[in-house]
Image 1 (cartoon, protein in one colour):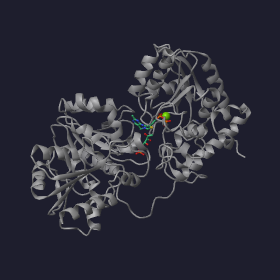
Image 2: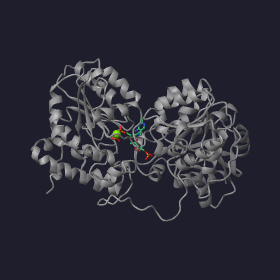
Image 3: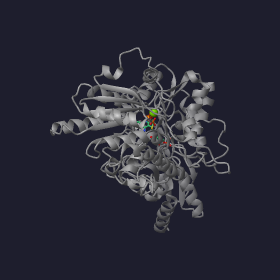
Length: 591
Ligand SMILES: Cc1ncc(C[n+]2csc(CCOP(=O)(O)OP(=O)(O)O)c2C)c(N)n1
Ligand SMILES: CC(=O)[C@@H](O)[C@H](O)COP(=O)(O)O
Ligand SMILES: [Mg+2]
């Protein structure tokens, strides 16, 4: 029997002798590889903290002692050792375990994560709460990566913690990489500390932390020893661990970017599963990345910005082609947005590529620094809509609603890759206001997408099919589902379909045409219904005294968990089946 099979909860782990732990380390690593190879997920980060995970649950009294995993993509070992091994094969699947720590999944998940750099503030909050309640013995630990600790939010927490007498241990898991290589002056500093060449006073000691490190994070004995030592002291403490992302799987160690989340792979060789043979339409992110390079070749004012997602957003193509005009600023969404504003103020044309979910962190910057000054920043908002297995923390559900209420902001959602290229082309031709272009995680529609650029009038929309009594108004990629549905229904003459392109400003001329001609209107979006595109159409109808029924399809007012995009579309009733049924019902009503 495997040792790992005997561990239900950390109390079982704490019954083992230290001599047994190396075997457990090997088995836990193997188990993570087995499951992720078959079921997909975040790999490298969890492999890198296997020793740390075992040591933490061995030394500390979890769940009474509080343990927070920053981002949480490295918490697979933690999940497996805390009562979830038998369900771990459901990780990131519909109805299964979340890929991130989640309070209502386990008492061992002290705080839900997914977005980075929140762990320091959350653990400080818990430690201060314990202090106020007179519990001076409870331990509070946050594990945070080298890329995440460089974010503003983490710095805010460290700055505060340094002057509090709070019982907090921060563990800096330094593997010198985020998803892509870490960037910035802090990275240089940490590299110097590792080499023993840091000339400056220790940064963390200067901030009033008791510092230990650097310690080899794969030397289990050393990690247990230093944790035991640090457990005895009080106040703010920081342990600097050096680890290797992907540790234990050769390919994952060698290609850390790909193996951050590699998809399916051979569990023995690490070889990635072969992509399907048939040629596929490009991913939207790649259309963005390649089109930006094309535009930047002709327009010297174009610059590119990404907060820590050069590969994910495909800004990497511009970084390769024009290294001096493309910037990875690290996990720093607020800085990225305000820096873009500064560049726009100086006449540059910044393309700021940010995932919809992470743009939430830079909301004040959008309003105060960009829109209020009407600066022509081009936001390329990737992963808009349902993203799939990352789940509730990562869906791009809110951008249409939170952008629509900001004055001066143009909002465009391309239905296909040509539309994306053309709006990017339009956006760099001297706009005098900001524009948000939002597109989903996934592929477009066409193999021949590199068509010549064309200007898109602002506002405008596309009448795809004229009908007689039911008008379907879609924004963005979900419009393709409507096209499928109409084909499936045999193109009923009653149904018209409009790709509305702009959520702000709406194409009011087209809307007057629609409300004058059609008896019934359906809106479709892959964002939250509250305050989104459908709401905008409702507001328009109210303002102009149109009284037709308006059926709005979109995401409900609840958090949507993980699953494939198709499963989640079905769950939220924006899939082919649900739209077909909706239209059949309306056809019965109008016939
Ligand atoms: C606010 C925010 N921005 C971006 C991301 C995307 N993201 C997830 S993990 C990651 C890198 C984290 O690197 P690090 O903290 O060093 O942890 P490691 O993966 O190396 O363990 C990034 C950028 C995120 N989760 N949250
Ligand atoms: C943990 C995290 O936030 C990222 O790794 C995220 O999962 C990336 O998403 P994509 O796979 O859509 O790039
Ligand atoms: Mg890292």
